[in-house]
Length: 413
Ligand SMILES: *Cc1c(COP(=O)(O)O)cnc(C)c1O
Image (cartoon, rainbow, N blue to C red; front, side):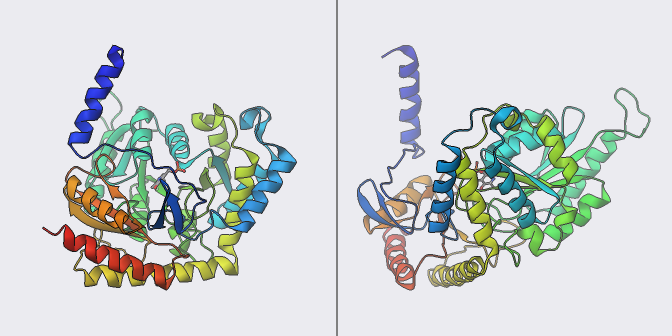
């Protein structure tokens, strides 16, 4: 072994000792409620495929057709010769879903955040992010060079205090104590449904607040797209504020059932991102099969079948709430706005080792719910992250009930 391996092995040993080591599990089946993981059957309560579209025949067929018609790869970035018809059709469908003038697709949500935030703000600007936003927003904010401030989770008072702070500073020209009109901007970034707690942002108040300070809002709808609003556009659609959120970001890898990222907004926003979003410009266009599958997912979300799937999902989520209440678990979010309806249920267990032990006990009974640990959540706030799907049946929910009741009893403290 060389020196690098020695150093890395020591670091891995430490992670292992702290209960923080992570490993890949091989899944030998398509994404579904029943999986085969490491050669054992598993009833899956861990996926973000909330509507059960990832393995839907319509997505498979659309992807296969695009693979035949347009091939496997795209040859170059979108701006060179890789901008294929499936990308353009997907973007038209996304703009329609989001109720915006235009949309742009990226390879994934992570690169959508990096590209959009980096294009919109720079050193002279300010960026305010919720304490619990996804890592891609944190990374993008740091990389942008803008002055970064973090506000307490879903706390509009704290956000307003930080908006005031930014507002005062942006009115001062560099090096002078005299207020002057300025070109510095403030971008607020938050999520509509938080990925680890499943609680919702107070969107209407947030929009009022940012308008009062002339700030821009970027809303990450990764866990909301497909699930909220009469046509599944997300929380902005559901609240009727699509045209007041400057930047609507999402992934196409969760409820949409495919892969990719998306930014939706005005025509000027999209035209600007095509010119300035580095993760869009300097990256090979996503494969046509993925774009076509995502478009099929978007169409399904807007169809009657999509509405039926949403109603099955919410009915299942209600049953999970009843189960968790019965077990005496506080499954609420950490914010002011406990989600009555999101497909994500954190079961807070505290110590990393306890979360791992409960997850392992569930696994022993054929139920898969992952233990979420640092760095995904703070140290000592380990939890099970239980997600529900439209595809879960009453029998699946009963199986979860038995397994979870036994596992929590076994590792009570
Ligand atoms: C999953 C996720 C992303 C990243 O999207 P990918 O397409 O998986 O890269 C961004 N934001 C949030 C809140 C997410 O949960």
